Length: 143
Image (cartoon, rainbow, N blue to C red):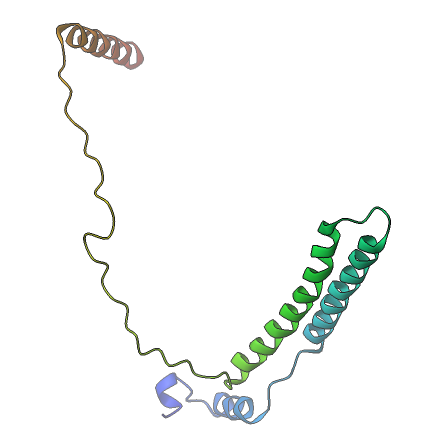
């Protein structure tokens, strides 16, 4: 594919494009620091919850949190690793051979339909009265 098809006709744009394709991606030191701080924070919170569980006032809720916080730390590291793979283009390709299929018409239950109600004389008179009130209100607002 030519650079001209993407609108890179100037020499400066061409040079910048080639430079961006040859320089490896930076790992963003601030992002690495954030991942380290977040993972260490999660591990520290897990340690704190473990100490709370072992104390006299500890409950099984503290044990649950003590086991949960290290999983959050693993999730932070995994998310960063996946981000780097996607950025570099080295992420494994997922082969999805199954195509989406159509949902069968009889899978879901039919929606109930509203049955027309018989309108008696009293309901007709009430609806007529409401229509008259609405007409009077429109006349008052127009004048």
